[in-house]
Length: 53
Image (cartoon, rainbow, N blue to C red; front, side, top):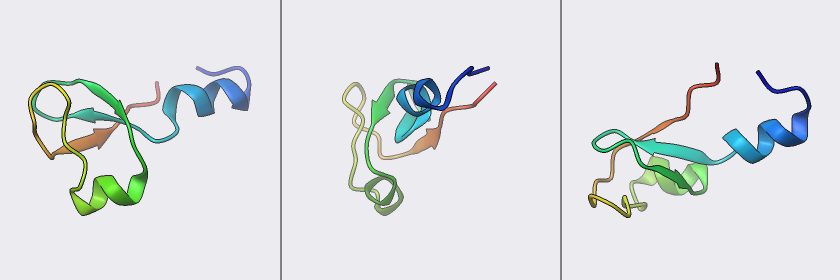
């Protein structure tokens, strides 16, 4: 989908989607795994990485 690596890094690096409301959020991987990141819309702690089509 991405034609050059800089664009892929902008779109997918450290970007996660909330499992409850699908809001996109940029945060470090380790904080997401530790559960320290909360969703800005619903307050959930469950995130998934974005799907690269």
